[in-house]
Length: 190
Length: 359
Image (cartoon, rainbow over all chains, first blue to last red; front, side):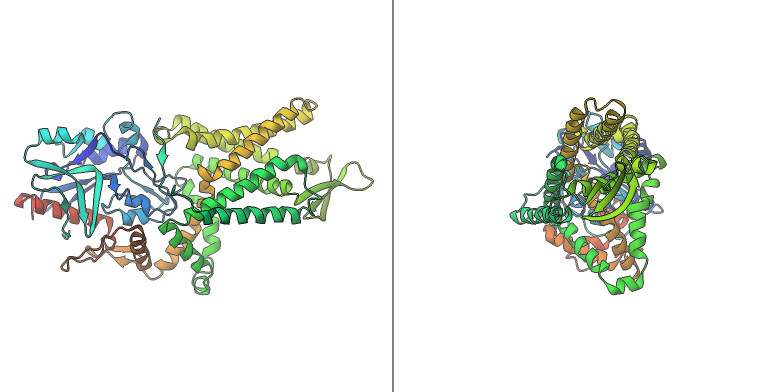
């Protein structure tokens, strides 16, 4: 299960404009809901912002789907981890709290979880996901690893991350300084 | 058309699960024998349906047993039954179980909040299918039977499990309705299918992720069953039984095929969905003790029991999000709220990127 093209997330390029949030709402499959997350470290002292999309975990495959008790989150052959099936999701929120990336969002009224699905209606027919299509600074870039390596010297793309003792390989990538091959996230307070 | 989806619960079945399914199917056959007055009330013309339902029982119970093997499902299953059978839970929230059943299973307000038309369509389908099942299954099993009263040509008596119950005039409206109740449920089912087929052809959000086998086929099968069912009545009452035998075969084939595929497709949500009753009880009972705060921001996170159970589920799955750093505020990633997971990751990322973004 591999994705031929992926999203490359480079938070160092993010200018916090929120275009990705707005574009995400416009995706046909998202019903006016933005499934993007855009977080700021501390707006009074830093311009730093972090856009978060689903990383479509490959190994172990989709922890969110594995903790789902009703098999509502399905993984297609191309590695895309889909939003929970509305007929199955029972609103337990296991995926919301189980996702290491903090991606799924719970709608209390609808008792339904929504998550980034890589704009499957678009990417399954060769188009780019909405967030990466509109990002003005290429903080979210949709393409291949070779394209990113060629266009961003002294940067590396990593798809292996360490959360505590758990190592995760993902379908989407993060762009980091070139000395890193595995990204270990130290726990830093907000 | 999107590629076929793979499901994580499609693990290899175990022999024990087939045994459980076989025992359930055998149990149903015994109940059919006993409930039909040792097959005296069993209508042999309905044997195809009976075989289909026995096969369905085997498949659903086997599939259910395999489903419960998933770590989180098994844990919720055990917790759910602990809560349902707990006197303390009942005393704390005596109305919880009926409220959860009414809200989740009957009223389905959560679907109404997703869209009024969607809710209307689902209610039509839900009550149509429930009604048809409650009528068809007892008839097929021979648990319900209708017999002419001795000496009468129009008065029938209904027998339930071999015991005589009410009598009615077959030529009255009530009598007609008793013998043609499935037409009423078929109208409900068709109305529901029209709503959902309309969505599947017109709603771009739905079209984006649907597949023919998983999403369209079940609706089309329900339409075939309902339309052929109504045509049987039309044939018998208006056209002196023209094409009746042909319609019977088409109708029976559609029903049996739909029954057999229930455990493997969209309709399995009918079996899974009642779990939401257990989830509501689990949440409400555990929330009485409040929410555990997020280890970083201190905002309410989730009930303590929920966090403990989630960690246990990850343990069973062989995933370890334990944080060994003694100076870190959390011992496990599940102790952070989603936002703190993202923001702490941002902090970590920018720290790795150098000082330009740091506070």
